[in-house]
Image (cartoon, rainbow, N blue to C red; front, top):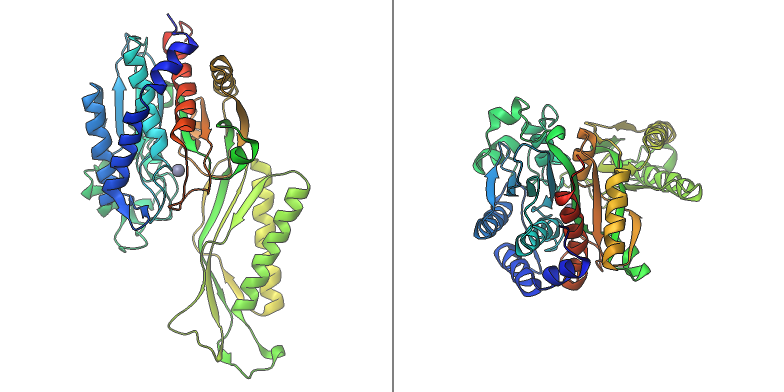
Length: 431
Ligand SMILES: [Zn+2]
């Protein structure tokens, strides 16, 4: 029997004070100034994993950690061999970030499973909430470390990436959290597309589109793909402040022209209704060399470019490379692009997307389709071949900062959509 919409709303909303208390515990244990720091494969993330695992064990769920220390919390189904339903998100955060980015999706999974338990629903297949490791790529500048390790597709060399603050390798940090490095290196998989019927990730919205639309919930249309150059170095020539303009090979002016040129590309893309985004997160001269009275001979910057369409992304990369060549020639500088990383475009599965829209409709919760520009582990699931989609929760003030402002009532509405979808799928006889 599928529970009625009002049963589901009632049981989800009844967990409001427990949910608020769990978010508070998470914040209290990872507080850092105004915000929280749950550092990837560090003490902050580890604390969150232990807290959530203990909570799941209290609920009577089966918990397991895989070779990359990802956490899976399962309500067993009648047929343990049937492909499972999976939901979840990540527990790490950026430094001095907000309490909800990532954690909301893990806690929503526990709320949904707790609701199925309270409704006495015995699922036909396992229902699993996942707490994925290392989604925030600020720490190691590698995307989707936890989810890619779970599917055995972490790129070669990633284990040797150094954490930006400690200077120690991913392998060392993972080992400290109990990961089996040899298995990660060998590309062992703890998840296989064939054994997951569908994946849904709930996440706070990181832009103000739901706030602007006065809606609590959105269903994601897809996760953008990206290409990244974390260490672009522009090399000109250091010179005396008195050097006339025509002799200068100024790295700061070249980098500025490059940045403005990228913005022109973005404007054109917007004008032709092809969504994209580019970000230069770091932009700096060398503090050992730079000075008030010196023409800067070198500048380092990071570049992230993202879009929703594979062809568009490839066109953007050609345009970026051409721009670098042009600016280099005009300014007499050299662009050393350095290492490149990328992630494929991951559109939502039409069937999962439609079922989430239907679930919201059945519950009377207003929801809209939304293209979120952020990266999410859902992309790894999609690329691996798991039917996937995302739910977004209204959130003022963006994310990756202490001012994230998700309302628990909005969160519970999104969790109710997730619960309805899980209940319908877990009782469905369709395979
Ligand atoms: Zn996130």
